[in-house]
Length: 357
Image 1 (spheres, rainbow, N blue to C red):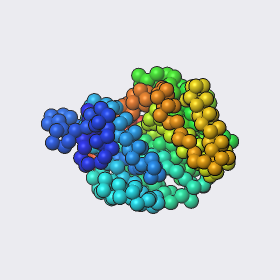
Image 2 (cartoon, rainbow, N blue to C red; image 1 turned 180 degrees about the horizontal axis):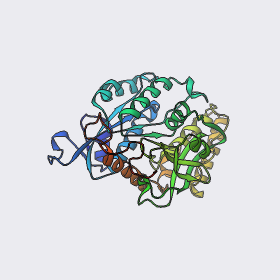
Image 3 (cartoon, rainbow, N blue to C red; image 1 turned 90 degrees about the vertical axis):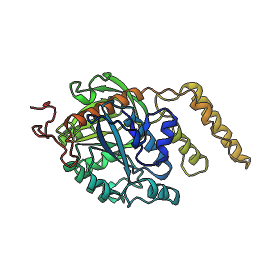
Image 4 (cartoon, rainbow, N blue to C red; image 1 turned 120 degrees about the horizontal axis):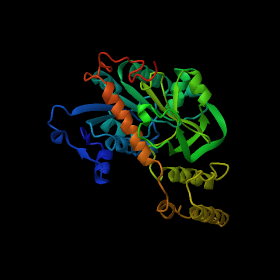
């Protein structure tokens, strides 16, 4: 079923134009057995990625499951510094957390964020994020945590701080399903790709020491998907299955341009398993032209984004769609119709699927 456009968020119009089914409130299904499900999106991403992140998660929600109509409620944390443009966007289209808390949610997604240092407890979002997740634990059926949000919650709830790696883990990596009977990975390929982009890691040993259940992992980059002990209340992603085909290229472009301007010590390495040799050659040739332009005191040549982007492959979106669809189905199965009562009578909230007797 579609996302209901209950506000005029520009991302909804862009998704409609791209083919995602978006309906107006007056167009929503009249049948009484079609459930309305309300999904919160706590968007902590920096200004430049704020709207792209909206579209990525909205698209996955809208494509995920035919069983309900989805109302998505974006919000953020006041403690995160914003520029004027992003602040205006948030003021117009986002909802206050107080309103969301009062209305209740069936599910919550919390995005990653950019940080200024290694110690997450010093970040401005630390305390308000801990308050949101504490509320969600008691009042929301399931919360999906993306990358940095997973690291923060593993730190302040489970006392498992992330560990800095010697090199950035970024690229597209093969993963295997470790618990195929879990409904989150039901009917999903046992081996599939997921993009990653991070300097820090929570190891499988740390997840398991915290009493969490690891469902999907990679030999190269470790855990991607894990859950809280009950299998649903919290769902942890270390990778970025929501990424667009060009997301890693955009990150490479950002860092390459910073390096070209002398703001980074060196050009970034190519993302693993992402660019073909021909596209790597194009980018290598571009960096050579950058050096020549700098030596001659000329302006930088244009980054060849369009030329490279047209030959990129997406090997993860269909599985991401399936996993999010399963997540929605799990939530639908155990959530209460009263969003302030997340678990139905007779279902054990510590083992809603009867998986862990």
